[in-house]
Length: 107
Image (cartoon, helix red, strand yellow):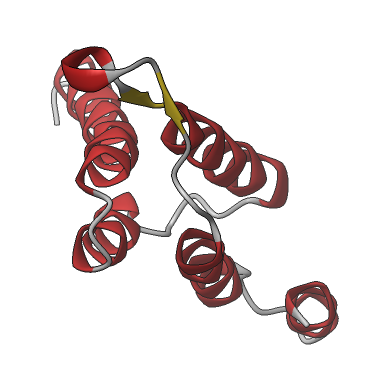
């Protein structure tokens, strides 16, 4: 359904942001965290994969105006704190780049 919604929004000349945000939240809800390692050394490797998929899809389809913070909040709400931190990191990197560029141009 998300593919259809993306095509319709493109046909209507709308930004894909709301569709991408919904897709990312649905992806988080459907995914299951996978652990590698044992005990205190265990890590959630599935979080890296889901984060990568979200960022790549946004880059590919032009979801530049989507706030990663909203998606990170959804991950946090469903108990995926590690994923929320990883996704939120991309929002911080983007805002840092914007600040660097605006100070370089004297804005």
